[in-house]
Image 1 (cartoon, helix red, strand yellow):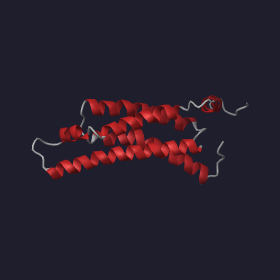
Image 2: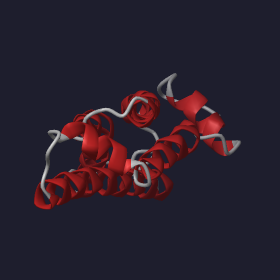
Image 3: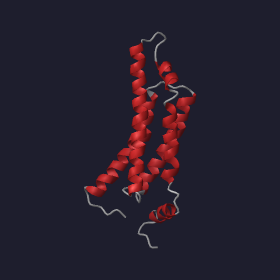
Length: 151
């Protein structure tokens, strides 16, 4: 098997054997994001003042829930894009995504265990879910708009 770039061969071998690094790191991020939902009450209460109203609680709770669901949507889009082959041979996208999901897993675990302020989930979402999803959108646009070959 002859490859033009040395980075494509290891990725192709890993994919052929069914050990795509994305499939290893994405489920961990998804599980961490899903586990945030049952424990969201603690994180919401930490972010509110001592005497909060029901409307303040509902607003904070819906903000946290929106961040969790947007994280899951971004992860699902990434999985679809990877398995459809849009970014399969783009090592930069893979590297950034693997790093981001590794960091997301650690941050979401700390978010749950240490009961961080609920707005911190938005910062986690921006850097570890939205940014890799935007890279996947760029890979899709590169493929469909610029007519770059898939493989």
